[in-house]
Length: 350
Ligand code: 5AD
Image 1 (spheres, rainbow, N blue to C red):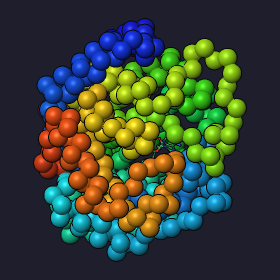
Image 2: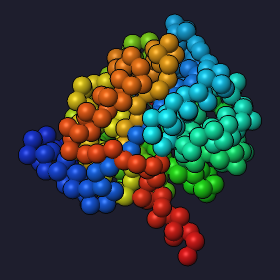
Image 3: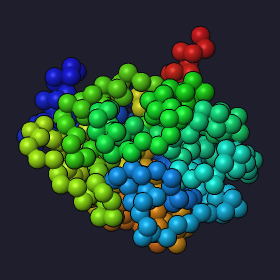
Image 4: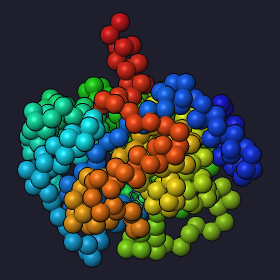
């Protein structure tokens, strides 16, 4: 697909074209990675964050939320729960919290690796390469870092600058791949000021970079953030629409452009649309990340409002399993490595 064709598909609002895109994405998923849906147990272990991203509710500028950190023991206990439910991967996510030093995270990874067979995914934001190396050495398998948008001007306008000695996200994604991590990235769709052309460029980047998993979620305005309170840029004819439908269209196009990747049904999608998981699977997704964070903490991991929070992990799993069956898919077994990652590894050692 050319850039021009991608832009035309992104712009299309014709229901038949959209249904055809989703069908094609589904077929490509079925014939490349199959209909097995892999689960990842998500643990949001700290909502402290030193950054000021203007869209995010846990930015350090938000003085109204109550901050928490889970203990090392609590985190390892979550890992054991995930493993006992037959799920193959834990995702450890937090704000950018310097309390969790490189050594502390490495120690948590080593303990999880010792007491469970889980694949460990980290999602801790921008960190120096030495930290990433320490975590890889400790046994971490994967790292998630969305680049959010490839439009430099938009990126800079929503991410007030922080530290010049931390490499930019694109460089960090390259470093992660070089260190042997399975790499996840992604974008938000529907940001104020985001254009069709820039989303087309995001999709072309997904294709050209070493990215094994791609998460695409709709931007959900959080009333406690500067971005939600900013006037929408007027008169941008190229502004992409807000909401779940455009995110789903972007998801379908991503599967068509990058067949062997893993692609999660994002929580933001399900927040805006009760049938977000089923529709995500129908548009080419093959991963779901049920939340294992104890409710008292999950309620405070408030990156955007309206997140559905099941009472407990068993309920979260029940919802996910029903949605998977409804979408004509089935539960995957094992760690659910990305096919693109396996191909990359194979190409690296002839
Ligand atoms: N709406 C939707 N997604 C958001 N994220 C952060 N804030 C929001 C929001 N208001 C996403 C970002 C980040 C991921 C962890 O959550 O894409 O990378």
